[in-house]
Image 1 (cartoon, rainbow, N blue to C red):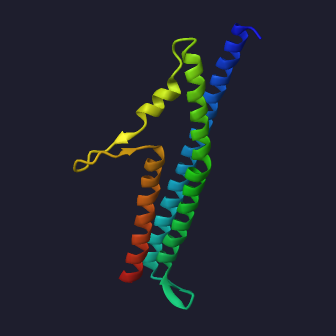
Image 2: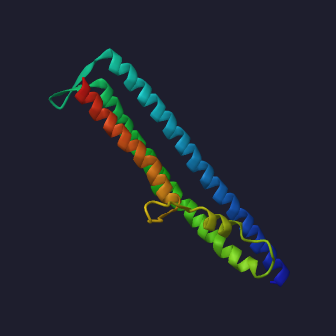
Image 3: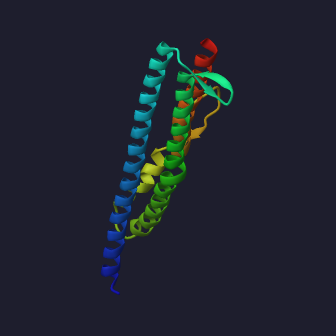
Length: 164
């Protein structure tokens, strides 16, 4: 195969890789959008249940309906985390790593290839906390996003149960 044809194939592979990265990134944002929709519905339903003061009998205990709804929302929230972080994010990372490899190959031939590598370098956010500077990569950001909400759902469920 001619050098020119090989270079054209590599460029097409890079374009496809960028499209795959965009596809997985879009899927992840849709998952997060659905997760926030679930969160909104659960918190709204729990607020209505608090006013209603309804208890449900669960495993021999009387539990406030709002607490049950919040725990059910927590389960749903955790499932969204699983699909986002454990499922699709790994596919996105695979596409990113492949793109970085292609850009290393193409960067030596033609100037201008490096978008994936640049995004990977710029993505981490460095916190400055009391002399500690941990970089937050995409998976850490996702863990903070899902973890904080999960913690709040647990806390709300406990407070609703204790407060009623």
